[in-house]
Image (tube, rainbow, N blue to C red; front, side, top):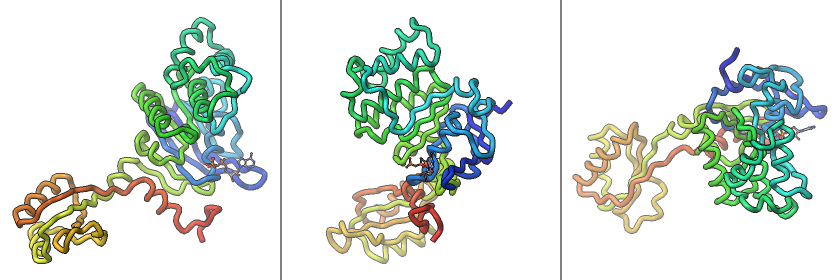
Length: 320
Ligand SMILES: Nc1ncnc2c1ncn2[C@@H]1O[C@H](COP(=O)(O)OP(=O)(O)OP(=O)(O)O)[C@@H](O)[C@H]1O
C-alpha cells in the first residue's frame, strides 16, 4: 500500500470539447501542503475533481492514502472546498453544516458539539443562525470551509479558498490552514493567490493548458537567487573597484537609483551566497568611509517564477 497522501499517475480528463487536463503525475506526501497553480482554464479544478471522485478520469490512475480515487474509503478521508459553491440559501448556515453532518453519517450528539465550535473557528459564530441568502460571498466561503472540516479530514482539497475574501478574511483562512498543517493534515491548494502558496505550501506545480509546466519546492524557488541591495552615501567609483578587488564579488551600481539624494548616494547591488556575506560587506563599506542607509534582499518571488513559466504562451496557453 502506498504511503503517499496523493499518488496520481498520468491522470487525464478529456472533455468532449478536447479541453481538460492531460497526463498529470504527482506524488504528495502525508502532511505536506501542495500548491497547484495555473492560469484560468489550465485544468486545476478538473484535476481536483478527479482526485475527490466527482468526475471519472479518461485514463490514468490515482490513490489517496493507498485507496483508489472515487472509492468510499478514499472519499471518507477527504475535506473538499469547491470553487464558488452555492449553498441552499433558504437554510441557515448552521442548518447547512448540520445537513452535511447527516450526509456524512455523523451522530447528532457529536454534531451538536462540533458545529458551534466549527462555526466559531471559521469566523461565522452567531451568524450561523442567519439564512445563507443574507451571507456575503466571503461568509459563504467560510461556510464551505466549515462543511469541509466537519469530518476532521486527513486531506483537504481547497479550490481557490480565499478568492472571495477580503485581506482580513484571507489571513484568517491562512491561519486555519496553518493550524491544520501543524496537526498533520495534508493540504492540496488550488490558488491564483501566489501569496497563499508562498506562505503555506512546501511544494507546488504549475499547470498550463492541461499539462504540468514546472514543479518544485517553494523554498527553492524563493531562495534561488540572493540578490541584495545597499543604499550608500559617500560613494565614489574607486571605492567600488576596491570593494570588488577585496571581495571577489561583482558589486555594481543599481540602475534603479532614482531615490538618489545626490551623486554620491547610490544603490549598490550584488548576488551573495549567504547572509553572513552581508555583514562582512557592510563592515568593508563603512571602513572605506561610506555611510550605509538601507539594506534589502530581493527574492525571486513566485509571481516572477509563474510569469517566466507562462511567458511566450498565448491566451490558450500554447507556445507562440
Ligand atoms: N464540464 C466541462 N465540459 C467541457 N469543458 C470543460 C468542463 N469543465 C471544464 N472545462 C474546460 O476545461 C478546461 C479546464 O477547466 P478547469 O475548470 O479545470 O480550469 P481551472 O484551471 O480550474 O480554471 P479556473 O482557475 O478558471 O477555475 C477549461 O478550458 C474549461 O473550459
